[in-house]
Length: 242
Image (cartoon, rainbow, N blue to C red; front, side):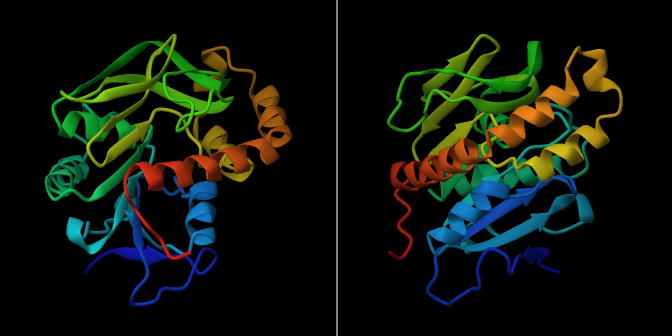
């Protein structure tokens, strides 16, 4: 079985469409605003639900691969699907397929290409502004952060943004990755909070404030995510139909 799901809420497929593969690691990990942005640009969206036993396709089946976030750690080789994903990302990079990694996806790609991932000394959960080296691609924010690990990019990568916690965006060849979560909608956030149990409270996160801030920032977050997606397409030389 190929193991791909599609969403009619985003776009119907045509034979000549640019195709994007979103890799989902849990049931509450969804393309969100990035899926909207893809649909708006006429990109056909496939979702590979690794958490549900789906099989990753060959890298050449898509013009863009978007590995999303995860509650797992990119350095934990006990994660059952991790080896297959790392292999796909290595082969996709070697084949010069465009890759846009998000949070765990950014960490997994960094590891696959020779970088490192480790537990963060300063986890980030909430809305943060970041220090950007290239505001034409990565805006200052605020962006939603939800990560307990940090990455060091692979050899030859250019760091595009940082925060006090570590690297927030990096780029190499046809790969561009962000540590933050441009895709998250209020509904996605609510699911993450529900699945986190007491962990956020134990870390001092004001959950209700986070919910309110996320809803207040919906117009900004959606527009920023769409702008970022367009800029990533341009940076990675992906050209959907006009």
